Amino acid sequence: MDLLKLLNEIEDILEESSTIPLSGKSLVDRHELLEIIKEIRIKLPDEIKQAEWIREERQRILAEAQKESETIINEAKLHIEEMIENDEITKKAKERSDEIISKAQNNAKDIRLGAKEYADELLKTVQGELASFEKEIGTLIKTLEENRNELSEM
Image (spheres, rainbow, N blue to C red):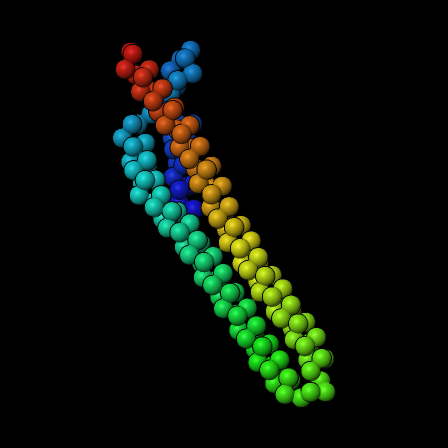
């Protein structure tokens, strides 16, 4: 992931920067850090696009599951109608049709739940990465502001 690479660059710059004796403060190349932050801002929309794609994929999977469940139910209904034509097996046909519909509904439910869980896991992963990224950026910005304040106080 490019964003993590850029954050690692910032971290390396901060770790390798000259320190001010007795203060624990570092001198950094402001221009270099601002360029990296600019690159992060450019790449951030890609992460958001990826999250949007995952959301759309989830919707597509759910729609597909719904369509498949409707097809299974319609096929079961057609099968029931064919069996009604024969009086001797009407009772058995009714029982079997109920069973088929129940299985179809359970299958459809399982497919929808699976698709939802899959999409939710993908979104949760992206959300976790974005939250981690946001926290790291916040820490970096705070450090940069502190360094700038210290430099301005000199």
